[in-house]
Amino acid sequence: MNGVEVTRRIRKEIGEDVSIIVLTAYDWSDIENEAKEAGVTAFCSKPLFLSELKTCLQSIVEAGEKEEEDENEEKPLVQARTGRILLAEDNELNQEIATAILGDAGFLSEVAGNGQIAVEMLKNSEPGYYQMILMDVRMPVMNGYEATKAIRELENKELASIPILAMTANAFDEDRQEALRCGMNGHLAKPIDVQKLFKTLDQILA
Image (cartoon, rainbow, N blue to C red; front, side, top):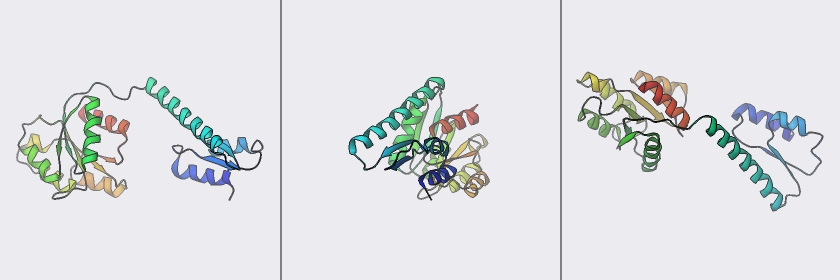
């Protein structure tokens, strides 16, 4: 299987997000059009010299940055938002990242290190204090599914009906279905797509 066909098959599997460079010792002008149509990002000559490879990689990076800048100019990343979100997440790094992302968007956030803590924090709050819960699924003591079921069974119906959004590294359909069966309002796969996160939050909180 030649490089063009390999590229074509890779694109079918993973889409356009990953750059593909063809390394060749031959003149690629004869196959350039076909290769570009298949999804090749750039070409680099062999034998491979560090300077040429560096130039090739730099051109790809700069092109990606320009495209991202253009997209950001057309579509602002975030809009003004307010409200307090309860973040149920046991991983400290994920806590910091999510808190920073939510803060930049205008949300206040409070962190629960596991599902049981999240349930207690919600029970001890007034209705409306939290607008939503971002619930990691895999947590110690009480996982996200168990915590959601416990919340939905709270005596205070206003607290029990708070929107809950699942966050999990499992992106299979059965995981989405399990989230919905437990009473969650939606499902986000990790690593979190920031644009999708805000779009989902806007839809639920509208």
